Length: 267
Image (cartoon, rainbow, N blue to C red):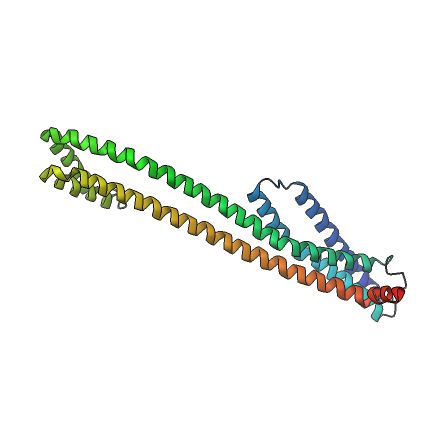
């Protein structure tokens, strides 16, 4: 026995799936919006990213609703309801509204990402400034300790022997060996010429400051780089969604004659 399928079943299924996708996405967006703490810039940025990342799902729902209407028209069942009563009108109007929202999300995300990056860079700068301020006291303390050791050659020699043993130890981590070898060399030079203590202290201070500044620049570069990538990724995604939603919405409304009817009324 040959089964028959109603030509209305496909449009109905497509429209139902489309409505489910749209409504579930709207509920998801409302829940996301109500949980946003606008004072917390990092969380706001994460929420905007989630908003854009989920933007394709309602677009699929809008497309399915549009296709279902097209199939009904091809089957000879045009929508005779008034535009403002037709479900298609509200779907297309929602698509246009979402296009505007996604368009607004682009500069909002750019500004928020910039603010987050600026705050992170400021924190890095504050930490570097604090570390630079500690260098002087640390160098002076070390200089005083070495000056005391120079007064007692036996203790100085013991200190140097302990350092030699540490440098030659197989258990010494590779990343620490260059630093200890540099200290070993400096101690030997100071032992040979105690007058170099001041110059070695200044040299150690300069090295510490250069290291702090180098780490600061590296961290700032990483922060700016991550912010740039996040801005481009979410910004381009939001822009493409804005264009897609707006085109679908306006083309759908134009097919329904919404704009032409309005123009005839005003003429």
